[in-house]
Image 1 (cartoon, rainbow, N blue to C red):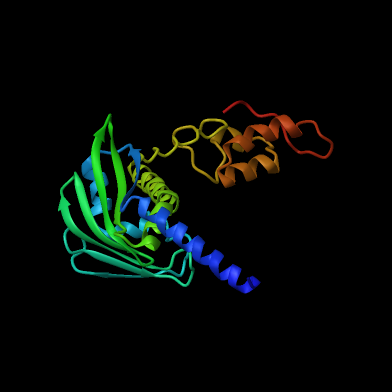
Image 2 (cartoon, one colour):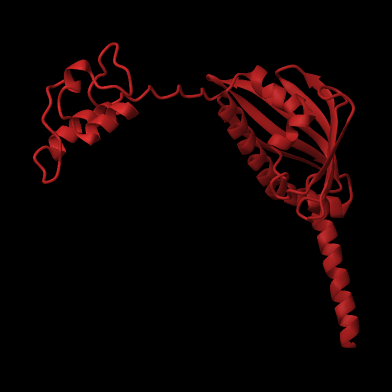
Length: 249
């Protein structure tokens, strides 16, 4: 038998084996990831029910800053739709349309992820003081061997995308709910307390008759309370200094 014939027969045998294995694979695949968010269900639900907010936590948005996004239908609830297009193969094209919306509990969506059609959902349930959010997808591969092999790889591919998206959603919701810290208290001004009635730019009456240093006069002119005293301690007695020790203010 010629080598080319053996190669053809081998490829045919491999195709038959793969098709036989595919028929044994499940015809219905469900992919789901969950995460607890420290916020009540009513708050989390607003991010899920409004397709215009999907860009805030989409796992594909950061991967392509030039992602083209369009919207149709209402902003939120049943009929709201978002579509995106990217030149990057890892993002591709896709769309999500809300088909059912049960306030604060559940949302169903018709989705197309790069040619993969299915039914996705968001589920919101109370979890302690927060909310447990589940993002899932149901995919029917039918009897097609190719679709069944594709369904086998969905959990690894889409599962990672769902986990990343929920992580971004958690960061977004919790950061916007984090209280803003109060401004720091004003820093106390160091130096000699200013006497009531003191006027910047003029020496007190009790100092006007003394040969006061130029530095001290300048400190009064500039309103520098600390300089009035530090000048006395630093320059009194120095060569060439005309400073005379003055009484405490």
